[in-house]
Amino acid sequence: EDFERTQDGLGFWERLQETQCTDQHHEKAAHDNINYLRSSKWDGPDSGDFTKYLDKARRQFANYTQAREHCQLQEYSDRTRVGWLLAGITSKDTQSQIRMNNVKDDDTYMDDWEKTAIYLAKTDYEGKNSKGKRKARFAEGDVSGVQGNPNGGGGGGGGGGGHKTKKPK
Image 1 (cartoon, helix red, strand yellow):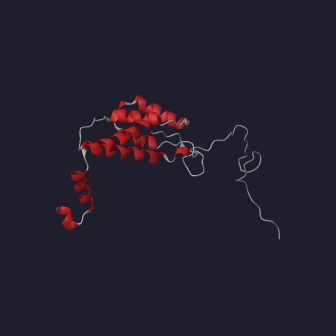
Image 2 (tube, rainbow, N blue to C red):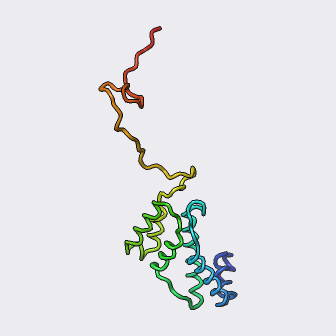
Image 3 (cartoon, one colour):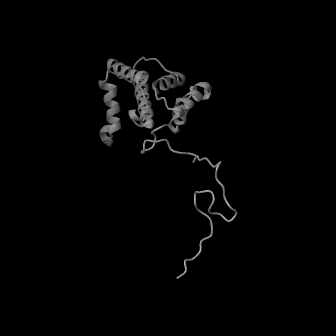
């Protein structure tokens, strides 16, 4: 065989699958993968990183597709997969909910699992960074009571600006 000459591990694995795995093995593997996709949940950062959740879902479907090549199994559309993905996200974070609603309202996202996964992975959800807080995109502050003078400094707090003079020696 080709893999014997090249000592190709992938070739060996493919040959092993073709000769040793029966339809029953493929059906069981496919069933396990689809069950994961239908029942997995991501509750927020406590459940792990969202991109890892997406990567695992991607791998599970790839495994299912590979098993489908060897036996008769149902074909699932991207719309069905996106539905499973949205049903599995149980986080109550506001930003996550907004993005999920945007996906539900847009057929271009509903019909493309990869596009949806990328869009959702960009969500700035609570606890996304290592400090456990949402990354601040805008520095908010109340400036209604701030007064300044034309030369800077004094009058309004916050410091900065103004003229500095040298101390006499």
